[in-house]
Length: 338
Ligand SMILES: O=C(Nc1ccc2c(c1)CCNCC2)c1ccc(-c2cn[nH]c2)cc1OCc1ccccc1
Image (cartoon, rainbow, N blue to C red):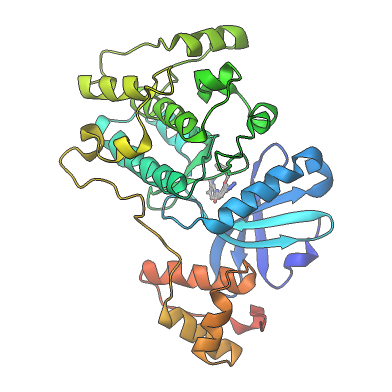
Protein backbone atom coordinates (compact mmCIF):
# COMPACT_ATOMS: atom_id res chain seq x y z
CA UNK A 1 0.00 0.00 0.00
CA UNK A 2 1.22 3.49 -0.82
CA UNK A 3 2.68 5.07 2.34
CA UNK A 4 0.82 8.35 2.83
CA UNK A 5 3.66 10.15 4.59
CA UNK A 6 1.59 13.34 5.00
CA UNK A 7 -0.48 11.61 7.67
CA UNK A 8 2.37 9.85 9.45
CA UNK A 9 2.14 10.23 13.21
CA UNK A 10 -1.29 11.87 12.93
CA UNK A 11 -3.52 9.07 11.67
CA UNK A 12 -3.13 5.34 11.52
CA UNK A 13 -4.79 3.78 8.46
CA UNK A 14 -6.89 0.64 8.72
CA UNK A 15 -8.84 -0.97 5.92
CA UNK A 16 -10.27 0.53 2.75
CA UNK A 17 -14.07 0.53 3.04
CA UNK A 18 -15.15 2.12 -0.16
CA UNK A 19 -13.93 3.00 -3.58
CA UNK A 20 -16.02 5.62 -5.37
CA UNK A 21 -15.54 7.26 -8.77
CA UNK A 22 -12.37 9.12 -8.03
CA UNK A 23 -12.19 8.67 -4.27
CA UNK A 24 -11.16 5.91 -1.94
CA UNK A 25 -12.47 5.85 1.63
CA UNK A 26 -10.27 4.32 4.30
CA UNK A 27 -10.96 3.82 7.99
CA UNK A 28 -8.33 5.33 10.25
CA UNK A 29 -7.60 6.28 13.84
CA UNK A 30 -6.91 9.88 14.86
CA UNK A 31 -3.88 9.20 17.06
CA UNK A 32 -4.16 12.12 19.50
CA UNK A 33 -7.65 11.06 20.64
CA UNK A 34 -7.82 7.41 19.54
CA UNK A 35 -11.10 8.20 17.76
CA UNK A 36 -12.03 6.47 14.51
CA UNK A 37 -12.40 8.59 11.38
CA UNK A 38 -13.03 8.06 7.68
CA UNK A 39 -10.43 9.41 5.29
CA UNK A 40 -11.49 10.17 1.72
CA UNK A 41 -8.38 10.01 -0.48
CA UNK A 42 -8.37 11.57 -3.92
CA UNK A 43 -5.49 11.63 -6.32
CA UNK A 44 -5.30 14.97 -8.10
CA UNK A 45 -4.23 13.38 -11.37
CA UNK A 46 -7.25 11.03 -11.33
CA UNK A 47 -9.53 14.00 -10.52
CA UNK A 48 -8.61 15.92 -13.65
CA UNK A 49 -11.57 18.15 -14.64
CA UNK A 50 -13.42 17.17 -11.47
CA UNK A 51 -10.93 19.12 -9.33
CA UNK A 52 -13.32 22.12 -9.03
CA UNK A 53 -15.94 19.74 -7.60
CA UNK A 54 -13.60 18.84 -4.75
CA UNK A 55 -12.87 22.49 -4.04
CA UNK A 56 -16.64 23.11 -4.01
CA UNK A 57 -17.25 20.21 -1.63
CA UNK A 58 -14.52 21.42 0.75
CA UNK A 59 -15.73 25.02 0.72
CA UNK A 60 -19.26 23.83 1.49
CA UNK A 61 -18.19 21.34 4.18
CA UNK A 62 -16.10 23.98 5.97
CA UNK A 63 -19.17 26.16 6.45
CA UNK A 64 -21.48 23.34 7.56
CA UNK A 65 -21.89 22.07 11.06
CA UNK A 66 -24.98 20.00 11.74
CA UNK A 67 -25.83 16.79 13.55
CA UNK A 68 -27.06 15.14 10.34
CA UNK A 69 -24.29 16.28 8.02
CA UNK A 70 -21.09 14.25 7.96
CA UNK A 71 -18.64 16.46 9.85
CA UNK A 72 -15.39 17.55 8.19
CA UNK A 73 -12.46 17.34 10.60
CA UNK A 74 -9.33 18.10 8.61
CA UNK A 75 -8.11 18.66 5.06
CA UNK A 76 -4.56 17.67 4.09
CA UNK A 77 -3.47 18.65 0.58
CA UNK A 78 -0.17 17.41 -0.93
CA UNK A 79 1.05 17.94 -4.50
CA UNK A 80 -0.49 14.65 -5.51
CA UNK A 81 -3.44 14.00 -3.16
CA UNK A 82 -6.31 15.41 -1.12
CA UNK A 83 -6.95 13.72 2.22
CA UNK A 84 -10.37 14.65 3.59
CA UNK A 85 -10.78 13.50 7.19
CA UNK A 86 -14.45 12.93 7.95
CA UNK A 87 -16.86 11.74 10.61
CA UNK A 88 -16.94 7.95 11.04
CA UNK A 89 -20.31 6.56 9.96
CA UNK A 90 -20.09 2.90 10.91
CA UNK A 91 -23.72 2.19 10.09
CA UNK A 92 -22.91 2.28 6.39
CA UNK A 93 -25.40 3.40 3.74
CA UNK A 94 -29.07 4.02 4.49
CA UNK A 95 -29.75 2.18 1.24
CA UNK A 96 -28.33 -1.06 2.59
CA UNK A 97 -30.36 -0.61 5.79
CA UNK A 98 -33.59 -0.31 3.78
CA UNK A 99 -32.77 -3.26 1.50
CA UNK A 100 -31.95 -5.61 4.40
CA UNK A 101 -35.30 -4.75 6.05
CA UNK A 102 -37.14 -4.91 2.70
CA UNK A 103 -38.85 -1.58 3.58
CA UNK A 104 -39.24 0.56 6.69
CA UNK A 105 -42.41 1.16 8.69
CA UNK A 106 -44.01 4.59 8.48
CA UNK A 107 -42.75 5.48 11.97
CA UNK A 108 -39.16 4.38 11.27
CA UNK A 109 -39.28 6.21 7.92
CA UNK A 110 -40.51 9.32 9.75
CA UNK A 111 -37.60 9.19 12.22
CA UNK A 112 -35.09 9.05 9.37
CA UNK A 113 -36.94 11.51 7.16
CA UNK A 114 -37.14 14.14 9.91
CA UNK A 115 -33.35 14.04 10.14
CA UNK A 116 -33.01 14.52 6.39
CA UNK A 117 -35.48 17.43 6.41
CA UNK A 118 -33.58 19.05 9.27
CA UNK A 119 -30.24 18.76 7.43
CA UNK A 120 -31.63 19.99 4.09
CA UNK A 121 -33.49 22.90 5.76
CA UNK A 122 -30.21 23.88 7.43
CA UNK A 123 -28.43 23.69 4.04
CA UNK A 124 -31.10 25.77 2.30
CA UNK A 125 -31.06 28.36 5.11
CA UNK A 126 -27.34 28.82 4.42
CA UNK A 127 -28.12 29.31 0.73
CA UNK A 128 -26.84 25.89 -0.34
CA UNK A 129 -28.58 23.13 -2.27
CA UNK A 130 -27.21 19.59 -2.10
CA UNK A 131 -28.40 18.62 -5.61
CA UNK A 132 -27.33 15.01 -5.32
CA UNK A 133 -29.58 13.67 -2.57
CA UNK A 134 -29.94 9.90 -2.88
CA UNK A 135 -29.89 6.95 -0.45
CA UNK A 136 -26.23 6.25 -1.27
CA UNK A 137 -25.38 9.73 0.03
CA UNK A 138 -27.07 9.13 3.36
CA UNK A 139 -24.99 7.20 5.88
CA UNK A 140 -25.76 5.98 9.39
CA UNK A 141 -23.54 6.36 12.43
CA UNK A 142 -23.26 3.89 15.29
CA UNK A 143 -26.48 5.29 16.82
CA UNK A 144 -28.61 4.97 13.64
CA UNK A 145 -28.28 8.75 13.29
CA UNK A 146 -28.32 9.91 9.64
CA UNK A 147 -25.38 11.74 8.06
CA UNK A 148 -25.60 13.44 4.65
CA UNK A 149 -22.42 13.06 2.62
CA UNK A 150 -20.95 14.00 -0.74
CA UNK A 151 -21.36 17.72 -1.24
CA UNK A 152 -19.43 17.54 -4.49
CA UNK A 153 -22.43 18.89 -6.39
CA UNK A 154 -23.80 21.22 -3.80
CA UNK A 155 -23.84 24.86 -4.80
CA UNK A 156 -25.40 28.15 -3.89
CA UNK A 157 -28.52 28.19 -6.11
CA UNK A 158 -27.55 31.54 -7.66
CA UNK A 159 -24.53 29.66 -9.00
CA UNK A 160 -26.93 27.34 -10.83
CA UNK A 161 -24.08 25.22 -12.18
CA UNK A 162 -26.42 22.72 -13.80
CA UNK A 163 -23.72 21.56 -16.20
CA UNK A 164 -21.91 20.21 -13.15
CA UNK A 165 -24.95 18.09 -12.35
CA UNK A 166 -25.18 16.54 -15.78
CA UNK A 167 -21.53 15.84 -16.16
CA UNK A 168 -20.90 14.35 -12.77
CA UNK A 169 -24.02 12.85 -11.28
CA UNK A 170 -24.45 9.14 -11.78
CA UNK A 171 -27.87 7.76 -12.54
CA UNK A 172 -30.50 10.51 -12.88
CA UNK A 173 -32.99 8.27 -11.06
CA UNK A 174 -33.38 11.02 -8.49
CA UNK A 175 -33.35 13.90 -11.00
CA UNK A 176 -36.38 16.19 -11.02
CA UNK A 177 -38.33 16.80 -14.29
CA UNK A 178 -36.92 20.33 -14.68
CA UNK A 179 -33.42 18.83 -14.58
CA UNK A 180 -34.33 16.13 -17.08
CA UNK A 181 -35.65 18.89 -19.37
CA UNK A 182 -32.41 20.83 -18.89
CA UNK A 183 -34.41 23.87 -17.75
CA UNK A 184 -33.11 26.68 -15.57
CA UNK A 185 -33.89 25.50 -12.07
CA UNK A 186 -33.45 26.31 -8.41
CA UNK A 187 -31.46 23.87 -6.29
CA UNK A 188 -33.89 23.80 -3.34
CA UNK A 189 -36.78 22.55 -5.50
CA UNK A 190 -34.55 19.86 -6.98
CA UNK A 191 -33.64 18.77 -3.46
CA UNK A 192 -37.31 18.47 -2.48
CA UNK A 193 -38.00 16.19 -5.46
CA UNK A 194 -35.00 14.03 -4.50
CA UNK A 195 -36.27 13.93 -0.91
CA UNK A 196 -39.59 12.66 -2.27
CA UNK A 197 -37.73 9.87 -4.05
CA UNK A 198 -35.83 9.17 -0.81
CA UNK A 199 -39.01 9.02 1.30
CA UNK A 200 -40.63 6.74 -1.27
CA UNK A 201 -37.57 4.45 -1.09
CA UNK A 202 -37.79 4.39 2.73
CA UNK A 203 -41.51 3.51 2.71
CA UNK A 204 -41.55 1.11 -0.24
CA UNK A 205 -38.03 -0.36 -0.46
CA UNK A 206 -37.79 0.47 -4.16
CA UNK A 207 -37.70 3.60 -6.32
CA UNK A 208 -40.74 5.47 -7.74
CA UNK A 209 -39.12 5.94 -11.16
CA UNK A 210 -36.78 3.28 -12.36
CA UNK A 211 -35.88 1.82 -15.71
CA UNK A 212 -32.66 0.43 -17.14
CA UNK A 213 -33.40 2.33 -20.34
CA UNK A 214 -32.58 5.99 -19.77
CA UNK A 215 -35.22 7.33 -22.19
CA UNK A 216 -38.08 5.42 -20.61
CA UNK A 217 -36.73 6.50 -17.21
CA UNK A 218 -36.94 10.14 -18.35
CA UNK A 219 -40.47 9.61 -19.68
CA UNK A 220 -41.57 8.19 -16.31
CA UNK A 221 -40.00 11.12 -14.41
CA UNK A 222 -41.58 13.69 -16.73
CA UNK A 223 -44.97 11.99 -16.44
CA UNK A 224 -44.68 12.17 -12.64
CA UNK A 225 -46.65 8.93 -12.51
CA UNK A 226 -45.51 6.21 -10.11
CA UNK A 227 -47.06 3.30 -8.29
CA UNK A 228 -48.72 3.86 -4.88
CA UNK A 229 -48.60 0.42 -3.21
CA UNK A 230 -51.55 -0.55 -1.01
CA UNK A 231 -49.44 -0.71 2.16
CA UNK A 232 -48.85 3.08 1.95
CA UNK A 233 -51.14 5.13 4.22
CA UNK A 234 -53.18 7.98 2.68
CA UNK A 235 -51.12 10.50 4.68
CA UNK A 236 -47.87 9.13 3.17
CA UNK A 237 -49.39 9.11 -0.32
CA UNK A 238 -50.47 12.76 0.05
CA UNK A 239 -47.06 13.92 1.26
CA UNK A 240 -45.19 12.10 -1.50
CA UNK A 241 -47.55 13.54 -4.13
CA UNK A 242 -46.70 17.03 -2.88
CA UNK A 243 -42.96 16.31 -3.18
CA UNK A 244 -43.06 14.41 -6.49
CA UNK A 245 -44.96 17.28 -8.08
CA UNK A 246 -43.63 17.70 -11.63
CA UNK A 247 -44.22 21.47 -11.60
CA UNK A 248 -41.48 22.90 -9.34
CA UNK A 249 -43.67 25.92 -8.63
CA UNK A 250 -46.39 23.71 -7.17
CA UNK A 251 -43.92 21.47 -5.30
CA UNK A 252 -43.96 21.69 -1.50
CA UNK A 253 -41.00 23.62 -0.07
CA UNK A 254 -38.63 22.51 2.70
CA UNK A 255 -40.01 25.30 4.91
CA UNK A 256 -43.52 23.81 4.52
CA UNK A 257 -42.13 20.34 5.22
CA UNK A 258 -40.79 21.51 8.61
CA UNK A 259 -44.33 21.90 9.94
CA UNK A 260 -46.12 19.31 7.75
CA UNK A 261 -48.49 17.10 9.83
CA UNK A 262 -46.99 13.86 8.44
CA UNK A 263 -43.56 15.11 9.56
CA UNK A 264 -44.53 16.57 12.94
CA UNK A 265 -47.16 13.88 13.68
CA UNK A 266 -48.02 15.42 17.07
CA UNK A 267 -44.35 15.88 17.95
CA UNK A 268 -42.52 19.22 17.84
CA UNK A 269 -41.79 20.81 14.44
CA UNK A 270 -38.24 20.40 13.19
CA UNK A 271 -35.96 23.36 13.73
CA UNK A 272 -33.46 23.65 10.84
CA UNK A 273 -30.83 24.62 13.38
CA UNK A 274 -31.15 21.49 15.52
CA UNK A 275 -27.84 19.89 16.23
CA UNK A 276 -25.42 22.69 15.49
CA UNK A 277 -22.26 21.04 16.74
CA UNK A 278 -19.41 23.51 16.45
CA UNK A 279 -19.25 25.42 19.74
CA UNK A 280 -16.90 26.66 22.44
CA UNK A 281 -16.35 23.96 25.05
CA UNK A 282 -14.11 24.92 27.97
CA UNK A 283 -13.15 21.37 28.98
CA UNK A 284 -11.92 20.47 25.49
CA UNK A 285 -10.15 23.82 25.12
CA UNK A 286 -8.51 23.46 28.53
CA UNK A 287 -7.19 19.97 27.77
CA UNK A 288 -5.74 21.09 24.43
CA UNK A 289 -4.31 24.26 25.98
CA UNK A 290 -2.60 22.18 28.66
CA UNK A 291 -1.03 19.86 26.08
CA UNK A 292 0.16 22.76 23.98
CA UNK A 293 1.35 24.63 27.05
CA UNK A 294 -0.65 27.76 26.17
CA UNK A 295 -3.41 29.64 28.01
CA UNK A 296 -7.01 28.47 27.24
CA UNK A 297 -8.00 31.78 25.64
CA UNK A 298 -4.90 31.55 23.42
CA UNK A 299 -5.99 28.04 22.45
CA UNK A 300 -9.57 29.13 21.69
CA UNK A 301 -8.31 32.14 19.69
CA UNK A 302 -6.49 29.64 17.49
CA UNK A 303 -9.28 27.03 17.33
CA UNK A 304 -12.07 29.43 16.42
CA UNK A 305 -10.26 30.21 13.14
CA UNK A 306 -11.48 26.73 12.09
CA UNK A 307 -8.41 26.03 9.95
CA UNK A 308 -9.40 22.36 9.57
CA UNK A 309 -5.87 21.34 10.57
CA UNK A 310 -4.97 18.62 13.08
CA UNK A 311 -6.05 20.83 15.99
CA UNK A 312 -9.51 21.35 14.49
CA UNK A 313 -9.82 17.57 14.12
CA UNK A 314 -8.61 17.03 17.70
CA UNK A 315 -11.03 19.62 19.09
CA UNK A 316 -14.07 18.33 17.18
CA UNK A 317 -13.26 14.71 18.09
CA UNK A 318 -12.90 15.67 21.77
CA UNK A 319 -16.32 17.41 21.52
CA UNK A 320 -17.75 14.18 20.13
CA UNK A 321 -16.26 12.16 22.98
CA UNK A 322 -17.68 14.56 25.53
CA UNK A 323 -21.13 14.40 23.90
CA UNK A 324 -20.96 10.60 24.18
CA UNK A 325 -20.01 10.92 27.87
CA UNK A 326 -16.53 9.50 27.33
CA UNK A 327 -13.45 10.76 29.29
CA UNK A 328 -11.40 13.45 27.53
CA UNK A 329 -7.84 12.32 26.94
CA UNK A 330 -5.03 13.27 24.59
CA UNK A 331 -1.98 11.39 23.44
CA UNK A 332 0.42 14.33 23.29
CA UNK A 333 2.96 12.45 21.13
CA UNK A 334 0.67 12.97 18.13
CA UNK A 335 -0.19 16.59 18.89
CA UNK A 336 1.51 19.25 16.87
CA UNK A 337 2.12 22.61 18.57
CA UNK A 338 0.21 25.31 16.60
O1 LIG B 1 -17.32 5.95 8.01
C1 LIG B 1 -17.67 5.72 6.86
N1 LIG B 1 -17.98 4.52 6.40
C2 LIG B 1 -17.98 3.34 7.14
C3 LIG B 1 -17.29 3.20 8.34
C4 LIG B 1 -17.32 1.97 9.02
C5 LIG B 1 -18.06 0.92 8.50
C6 LIG B 1 -18.77 1.09 7.30
C7 LIG B 1 -18.72 2.29 6.60
C8 LIG B 1 -19.58 -0.01 6.72
C9 LIG B 1 -18.70 -1.16 6.29
N2 LIG B 1 -18.37 -2.07 7.41
C10 LIG B 1 -17.43 -1.48 8.37
C11 LIG B 1 -18.07 -0.38 9.21
C12 LIG B 1 -17.74 6.84 5.88
C13 LIG B 1 -17.69 8.14 6.35
C14 LIG B 1 -17.74 9.19 5.46
C15 LIG B 1 -17.86 8.95 4.10
C16 LIG B 1 -17.92 10.06 3.17
C17 LIG B 1 -18.20 11.34 3.50
N3 LIG B 1 -18.14 12.07 2.38
N4 LIG B 1 -17.83 11.25 1.35
C18 LIG B 1 -17.69 10.01 1.82
C19 LIG B 1 -17.95 7.66 3.61
C20 LIG B 1 -17.90 6.60 4.51
O2 LIG B 1 -17.99 5.32 4.09
C21 LIG B 1 -18.30 5.08 2.72
C22 LIG B 1 -18.92 3.74 2.73
C23 LIG B 1 -18.11 2.65 2.53
C24 LIG B 1 -18.67 1.38 2.60
C25 LIG B 1 -20.04 1.22 2.87
C26 LIG B 1 -20.81 2.36 3.10
C27 LIG B 1 -20.26 3.63 3.04
